[in-house]
Structure formats: C-alpha cells, structure tokens
Length: 136
Image (cartoon, rainbow, N blue to C red; front, side, top):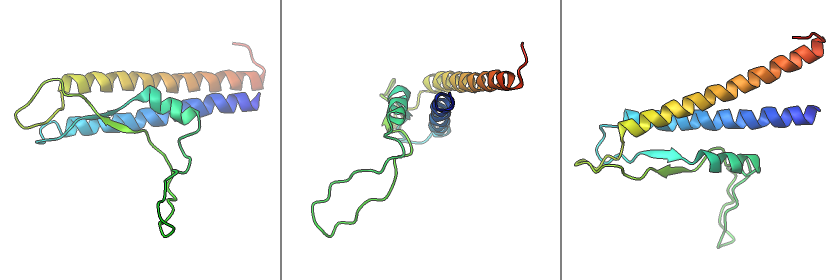
C-alpha cells in the first residue's frame, strides 16, 4: 500500500516539477517578446513526463568517449529537452514569440499544475481520513 502511495505521489511530484519548468520557459518567452532574433522555446510535456516516469530523468548521461584521455561526464539529466517552437508568423526582427500562443500555453499549464496540486491534496485528505478512522 505504501509503495503504491509513493508511486502516486512521485508521479504527481514529477508532473508538478515539469509543469514548473515549463512555466519558467513560457515566462521567458513572454519576457523576450521584443528581443530581436529571440526564438521561442517550449517542451513536449508528454514526452518529458514519460521519460521521467520511465526513469531516464535523474540518471547519469551516457557519453561516448573516443579517446582514453577523455573525461567522463558526472552530470545528471534533471530537466526536459527544450525545443524551438515553430514560427507562427514571420517578424522583421526574427523574433518567433507569438503572445497569443504563449498566453494560451501558460494558462493551460497553470490549470494543469493546479489540477495536480488538487489531486495530491485530495489524496492526502483521504489518507488522513482513513488513518483517523472518520467517515466523511
């Protein structure tokens, strides 16, 4: 029972962490809306979550070395791969930020972040009720 609870909580913690990272990326896009040649970035949330759940996040990066004197990498994969968002409308200064797209993505991400928090709160309340032996 505890491992199942840990799995559920771990899944939602991972989802919340990734949502937080995505919110930062979207905020950065909005902050750079007037920066010449800035390219809007985003992450594929589903792909990042699948990678984290399958255990690729937090695992050592495996780098190929072609010579014995190459130094081994000791870093960990902690965040999702950022991708450049395709240009929706061309601009004279080369900036690819579309404010409507950014606002919509930020609103959607915020709602899903809140949904994950609500699910965790509900799960904790039901566990507290079960432990204390009260109904309703």
